[in-house]
Image (cartoon, rainbow, N blue to C red; front, side):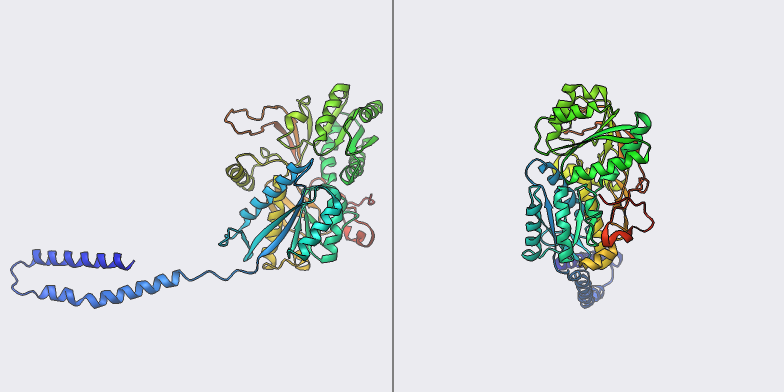
Length: 463
């Protein structure tokens, strides 16, 4: 800076001397030159002023608060490892989206605190999830928990949250139990519930296909919650669940269970499953002719396994939690662009869920001024409305259910790379309907000491 300034001053001296020589060539004395030389001390003063200004602009930013550690528990291996990966990627990008800046280690800064995420694999095992959560809290010093994939793990983690007075932000686990009969004030969710799934599809199927339903569902917390929700949703719109069929998660041949559903005479067959078993289930449905004799309604799953699972289902209509082609908003645009840039692929089924969890937690931390204690965060999260990739979210203060849009889509294509550019866009769907975030009237299922919190919400007995 100083060398440049001296150069400029020197040039001005030369120019002044030249101009002086040109304008007054006949003057016999060198007084103008002496006058220019005399101006050098003020130049030194100018340099000192500039130097002081630079020092002011380079003052260090305000000191950061302590590192905020968030423990993320997901199924990072096993049958649903893909979901854990989506959860992890979405949460990472969500924190980046909400960051006020980054520290010298590249960690996003939220409410003046660098955020470090510690990821643990529970393998879908509830006991391991609890053990990992306790280790994260006691040894790693995490102040918030996020996840998991497994609904059974989510139910188990509710007790950890209560015992440690620490926020558990659930996503992508879908069982309604953690914000129903297993609720406590430290448990929140951005994931949808089984009621969101069933309410959005039951109305469509009752009105367009018929009133009677069979239900093949995985016999765990996720499936059991879905069965309760389907019975409620179908009845609400004038239908009846006449054949609930529970199936063990380890099943490799679904023939007997499908036959039971077909023998019921139901016009609709709803499926609740997760993981790679979906492929075998659909193969068995096709082999037995169930896809021709019944309208199969289900949740359209992840992009990567889509062709293998739904190869026989072109033209079918189903519910969908998130597909990147559906929302039209700036948050989703940012997520899609950044995800492709970072991972060279498009966001998938549960990527937006992890992203939404990050947004909700960041918004709450900004309200609390970086205080991540459970009681401070409860006050900030209850009633929070925010914009997520799917659209508007609202966390109900009564039971901490996250009201959100849901999709009804029609499967029209199974070619993942229609434009042949080498990157799979997975443009599989035609959008039939997208619900408003507060349209579905998800019932409140709080029980015991928390039952009175339901207030004016629609209430059904806890399962």
